[in-house]
Image (tube, rainbow, N blue to C red; front, side, top):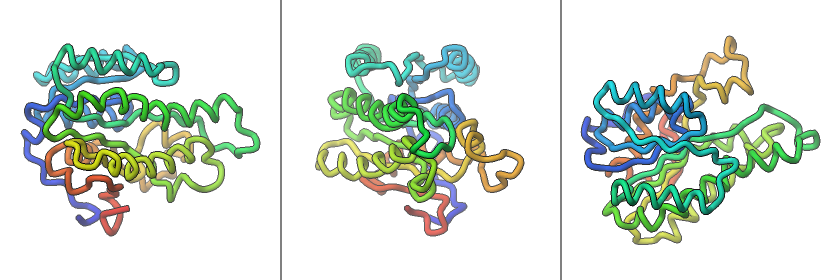
Length: 253
């Protein structure tokens, strides 16, 4: 796929599917929630800021696609909390067909030597460990779907593996490795795992590392949301176990 090509997803690409959007009220999270609703998905929206979740709920409800809301702070959630989330989704829907991980924590560029230990641990936990805990808790439910997808949004390690990215950058490298590792372990299970490497986007997270007025290469999150839908839809099987950078010149990582 060329750098500027948009995925050819049908309007009903996610019809009949239950999708959990993690980090739903963030920049890419909100855009992806809207795109998934337009593609026909039944949505469960997870985020830590209840007022923002409520506003997104009202926006989707006005479009005729009222989602279920699940307030949760990934930083403080335990494995038992994630197991409870899976149980509640099972009770409400009886199935789960997709998870898209978009929640992220980044406090800014700091030398490792000067990084606060608690901030370092938080970055690793929210961006890596909590993503895995949630996925692990949902795997039994995902296995019941004939075609389930787990999508991790990953900040390209080629950008975040250098100086000053700290625990956040290390978490992105860990996520990149986990995609292939988990897919290899799942084997023939009806669950496909993929990583989406978005381009630089105009979001509050990126603003912590770049001056907005000078950040001319960043794209709108809405430009990327369709690619999240593409990975959640059946056609996303083409990227099983892989990292996909649809905006890169060669269309891949």
